[in-house]
Length: 349
Image (cartoon, rainbow, N blue to C red):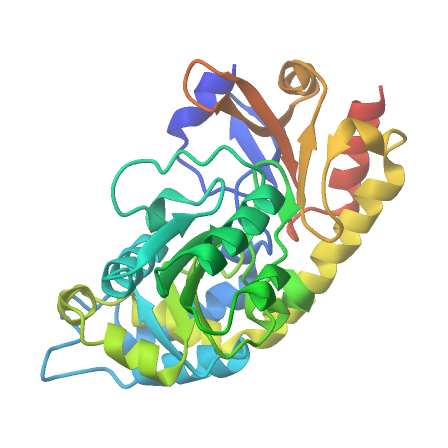
């Protein structure tokens, strides 16, 4: 039955239709429900009317749309960064950042770092984040290498965990460190709807650069890099940024004008999360962190039981195609109270 959902010809939403049957959908990454938010869509349509469908020229072209500089200034201010650059995808944002900043630096990957940050093959880090953070502080402080590059996600959205970066305060002041954080599953959600930046301690010898996809909670096809003006300006000189086509201007127009939409959606999401956790009788059977919309189930074959109730959750083999299903419930702003209650009723049956 689940295989029928692999070739849909409808938009993803709180419910999906298959063979005339309605299924509640609790998966994906549209945490704030932006792809189905009518007010946001109206802003997007206004952006299309003003700027057209797309912009196939590079940022190095002699003719430019002013909204790209405007959006970069806006997003930097919105998420508390000194500067920002915007690309067509989160993957491109991550790759150009790593390739530019990794030069002549000793590199260390945190566990489960997203492939967008990989330079070559899978770094195969098998420690917990806490174990890695303690070990890397010791390694850096005892090493003769002065220049380091650390790479990490801000959260683990598969086995829900929000990472704590306070460990960087223990790195010896003589070491020069760049910390690149992929905040794709945190931007717009963490720290009251902001980003990981506001939770990072300021240290003179550790420069923090944040990369993220804007296609998840923020709902637009674009990538972003936050950092110091010096770091961002150097990245804008890279061939990857200079030669690549930017994202659709309409999406950036919508993002700029829809901040009230994001605020309302964030509040709705928190209410949905609270309702879900209140209704569950056995929270110990779930892996979750407060205020994050992903819930990992520890019940075997729960995806099959819920499918019988016409409820579809995120379920796929992990860590590869031969692994056991990783089953997660993803709550979104587009879910109604009735949706949440129907889900919890099925879970408690």
